[in-house]
Image (cartoon, rainbow, N blue to C red; front, side, top):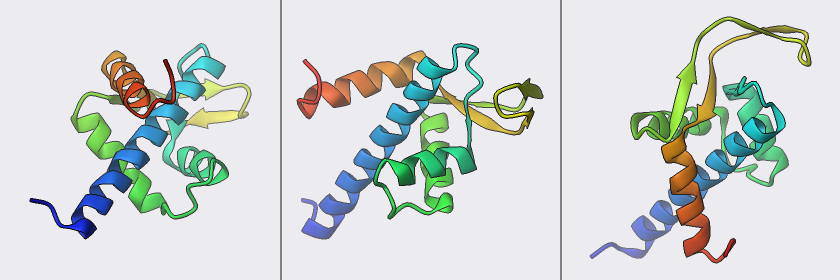
Length: 113
C-alpha cells in the first residue's frame, strides 16, 4: 500500500505530465507545422498556466519520461521559425500515443466527455 506522501507525489507527477501534454497539444494546434516547444518555452507556458511549482529541471525530467514512454517526441532538426525570428533548438512535440493518453486522462478526471 502507498503512504499518503507517496500517493500525493504520484498524483502531482500525473498532473504535471498531463499539463505538459496539454501544452504540447495546444502548441501543435496553434503551429500547424508542428515546430514543437523548446524546454524554456514549455516551462514558460507551464508557469503561465499556473504551474509555478515546476522548475525548468522538473520540466526536463517530466519530458524525458514522456519521450521514454512514446508520448512525446524530441526534435533536433534545425528549423527556422519565422514567428520566433530564429532557428529552433531541441524541441518537443506530442505523439499520437501522447494524444490518446491525454484524452484518456482528461476523461478520467471528467475534464472532457
